[in-house]
Length: 225
Length: 225
DNA sequence: GTTACGCTTAAGATTGGCTTAAGATATAAT
DNA sequence: ATTATATCTTAAGCCAATCTTAAGCGTAAC
Image (cartoon, rainbow over all chains, first blue to last red; front, side, top):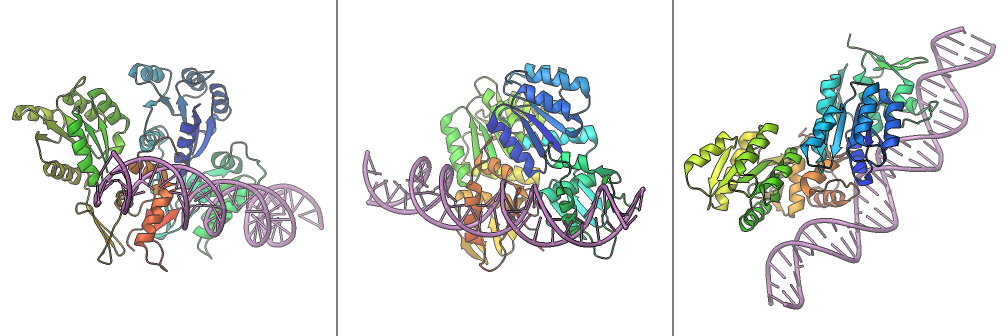
């Protein structure tokens, strides 16, 4: 799950970034309108939600929102507005945003809205199952046969991605872009290392691995048989 | 546990604030209707109870209550009414309040009503247990193996939060927001210091800590095994 | 048999949490 | 009001978990 924040106030941007990281999201920050629009348009398919500040140096949020909407009509966009006039927010919704939130806001509130949008726009769940493995993203718990397994942040994020795409093959390139940095080198072997770690923690020796390798393409967790 | 007081008479507001602080609540005060509504709407998820004065400069209590109810149907709202006519109170309940209390009231009475509402509306308990630790929020007592442990306010609040979420991972961001009311800032190490203090007071040397660290995410008290 | 790709391991680099101590603030006592 | 005491917050250095890189090995595909 990857989120783009377009926000010029570094303190707010970082606060949101850290909070979302704790929830297992990967986050990109653009500190001005131009960068924001470029990042958004270059990687539209990668982002699951976009947070747009209203007042931005250069290009303002409304314009960015319109430009994004021209390319993609479904990606959830949330406005962060400092103004307390509701009118502006309505204006934002007309420009194609899905929701708005007034500053100052609590992180919990922001997260709730993000989850609502993700759920309604992409039927996204926060609980997963595969074989004897259970994952609860909100509680940040993974268990095997009922016993808790502890995973590091990256392991957790990788497993979440694979489970969200259960039955489909996840390409290495997309995995890298979703979980690591957008500009990560594609020939890195980080993925291998983490797939290995997951297998060691989740598989039962003697049985086929939860995660299947699709040579030349990526990895896959099979749909329950 | 966080409470919002919307009340223009400073003396009453402060009186309630101090009393609730002693009980371990975090308290926000708005001294007029507009501020009150804004605080409420911006942080709905944060508040566990809202106390609304009836007569307020600007926006009155009824209107605030209606506006809050439009957003959230379950958060307990208690009216503080100076009028002694019961009719007005009924009017308040129709606007979506859960209870009312007539001024002047004793703090004890107010607290009792708050506790009743918290219990019925969010199945919130006031007693917790984890390992050899017992916590009784109403009596403000924590004990280990039956012997009392004394905790400072912040330590108590933190432990309460962790216990209320036993089995779940509590994110640092959420903890900071709930207990310290710090928003938009993330590089503080207060949490670490207090977790450290709790561990020193509650753990038995040589055994695993009551509070587990989940790196990059937060802390957690395990469900009883 | 050769080649390309993925697996495994181990060794730096980095990040984040732990611990302490000292500086603020608030509360109680004189 | 002043001092004393408890509590809260900040900051810094240390340490350990986690992340990343890289190199050698195994194996599937051609």
